[in-house]
Amino acid sequence: MVSRIVETNNTELFGLLYDRHARVVYNKCLVFLQNPIEAQDLTHDIFVHLFVKLRTFKGHSKFTTWLYSLTYNFCVNYIQRDVEKVHKKEPIRDDVLEAVDDGIPDERLFELKWDKMQRAMKAIDPDEKALLIMKYQDDFSIKDIMQALDINESAVKMRLKRSKNKLLEAYNNLG
Amino acid sequence: MENPFKQLIYREALPELIKEKVMEDINLIKLGLDLADLFVIKNPQIIKESFKKPKK
Image 1 (cartoon, rainbow over the protein chains, first blue to last red):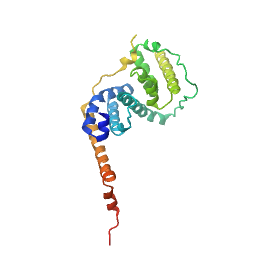
Image 2 (image 1 turned 135 degrees about the horizontal axis):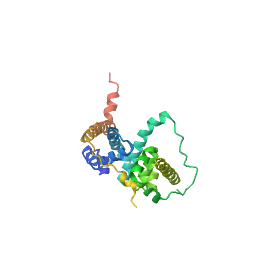
Image 3 (image 1 turned 120 degrees about the vertical axis):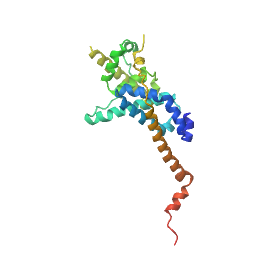
C-alpha cells in the first residue's frame, strides 16, 4: 500500500493508511503529552508530514517500526523545542564508552510496579522515555533504534544504560 | 514476570475531525505536487513560453 501511495499520491489510499494507524499514533503521542488536544494536533501534524515523507520509507524495517520512530522523534522535538529555549541542555556524549554493558538487567525493570513506573516516566527526559518505549514496549531491536535515531550501536547502548538508570532513580525517588 | 512497559499503552479514541483536517491538508499538498508535476516535469515549455519576450 505504501509504494502505491508514493507512486500515485492517491489520497484515498492514504486515508486507509490513516484509518489503520492513526489511533495507535495518537495513543503513542498521549504517552508524551498528557493533554489530549495537544496530542490530537500532533497526530494531525505527524500524518500531514507522513504524506510528504512516505517516499523516504525504503522498507529496511517494518512500516510500523518506521512510523513509530517518526512519531517518537516528532514528540521529542515538539517537547524539547520549548524546553531548549529556556535552558540549553548539555549535549549527549555517546563517544565516552565503547560497547558498554548496560549493567541493569531487563528483569529489574520488569519488576517495577507499572502505575508507579508511569509516574517515574513523567519525570525523565522525553528522549529517554522514547528510547525505553522503543526498546521495551515496541520491542525495537538495537538496529531499529540505530536507524530511528541515526546513531551507532555503542551510542544506543550508552543511551539505554543512561535512560534505565534515570528511570530507576526517578522510580526510587517516588518513595 | 509481566513487562510493565506493555501496560503503559493508552487506548483512547481519536476524534473523526482530525482525519477531516488531515485529508484537507494532504489534498492541498497533492494539488501543489500535481501542479508542479504538470508545469515543471510534463510541460516545461509552458513556463518557457510564458517567460519569452513577445516578438515585435
